[in-house]
View 1 (cartoon, one colour):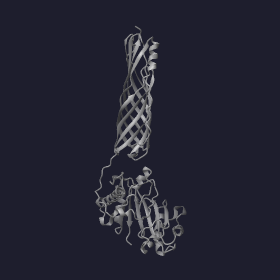
View 2 (tube, rainbow, N blue to C red):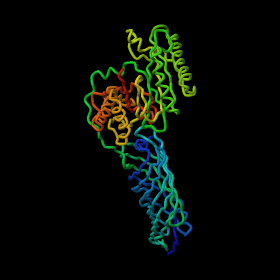
View 3 (tube, helix red, strand yellow):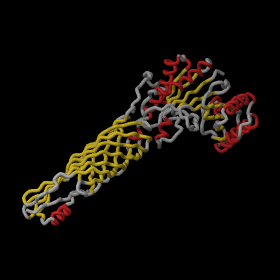
View 4 (cartoon, one colour):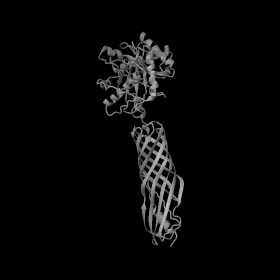
Length: 496
């Protein structure tokens, strides 16, 4: 009987390619811990020609080889998401058991089996495409434990039947993930492991699997009271022409205060009246108190005259305000911008004289102040645009906004003659405009409820209005834009 010192078997197989689509990494918070597990089918391509060649070198010819190249594999993992595009992930994997049986001449058999398991540490790159769907790719190090077992019958004798080896190598893969809810996602993944077996061979094992991932801290408990049903008239509000609120983004997105100044003009005039200069004085005080702020001066007209003439007239009105602020308030020209909108943004119905008068106006939009304490603006109207983050289709107020709303309450208590209107807005991602209107109304009402219940502001001084998608100031084509449109504006109205 011939002695077979060692028979080597290795596996290689083709990677099942998956196109990187979109996953739910970006739908959760920008950072945090997560855990999960996958299960699926692992597969190896047994190198039959190499087995036959090894047997031939020992004096055996091969009459046939039967392969066992598939098995159930699984992995358990945990990771940390640093931001919406990158995570580190480590875990344990078990690829299962693979083997072959070769029939030989002289008569005998050689059987080989290998069991593969180990640990891994991967860098994960994430590519969000939608709010719930993202793709990801991974590459990392593995430390694999390969245990081989060889048995021979008949003329085949194996001298080292149970070799084993532990060796570092690498793996890579791609996958998809879908967010079922904010804290739970589903995965589909293909991963290739480069394996060193116990007898000096290298090969690839692929695991195609599905799994579940759980993110810690993904859900925020609701706290706001249930608002009353949406008024029937709210559906018409979004159709009315409204001025566009421009908020200049700043690093601290939790709060942005804007002073909106309403100055009216006589028919076909661009001269600033004496009483309106008092309002401009307030605006100048505001800009001087906050030297880092900038202002957009918007000019508007009624519909009397041609559109081309009205654009020129509105530009002259805006230019005259800018000139006044530069000369009287000593505001640097680089902080001011004049824009003429003509008749395109009416506040009221041009069919009435009162409506035309209201449309002959200047809006001064001033952004980026960080507080409103100590500033008297009785002749003006002040708008606070709070970027309160809401989950999609939800209206619950998160606890981190309590301090910001306390400032609103303190301002109202210090100015008892001031009332406020809370405007709710959405990112226009709802199934219907009616649903978007309802959600924006609930958001506004929840802010009102918060100010009344938690800070003791009289409900008679507050009102809530929902505008749905009607006052969007960012594009919905990005996640950031969608979030910015899910906002609340608080308009402080002074007694005239």
